[in-house]
Length: 268
Image: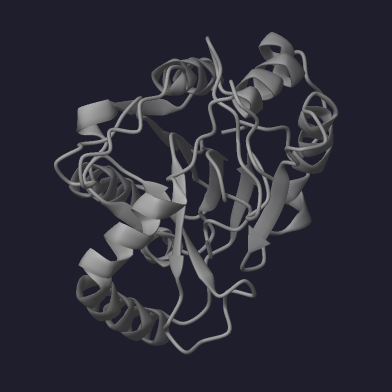
């Protein structure tokens, strides 16, 4: 019998001491994490939830590392993230980012590069099904990894803060990228993973009073478990429930087989 492990991260704010005074306060991210954990638990996953101050790089990588040590071929990892997304210039010299930007998950203590997400996934054994659901801005390819109107709460790290943090952390990021590139070269092909995200890399994802717009659409499409169909059908069902300004993305890395992609979501 397959084993399913899931991690659900929800950050309603970040540590302002680590983000030059910016707290990035949001409303619905912890609710999103709880709701996704509820779906996963009902589906038979063993769940872990990290909320706001717990959502650090060390905690996220520790939980994912433990999952990698436990899961084998045929098992499944579900990783959901709700919070801010960011972007930093990609000066690695590679062509893996068409927009010349690395997308990031804005964790509590620092930004987590899309390449770091990939690194954590490469630790999993061949044949582990990896599913990531990201409700944040700039999330279209975050596992390679329009403006917001007044009154909307966008889940994005504002551009002035992005520039300031990049200037501050540039040396750290350069060294981190060198380490990530070495790891990727040693471990070879990308893992077979499926990302369903809130929006494209150049879009913003909306927060809400109860759930983020993407998570709210996902919950409506899931319909308490009544949904039938695979991940492509699920993506389309979520897309129909979002405004045209927020287009969810279905993104695959590695070579996930049709049996995986065509499975009903959250199948252990």
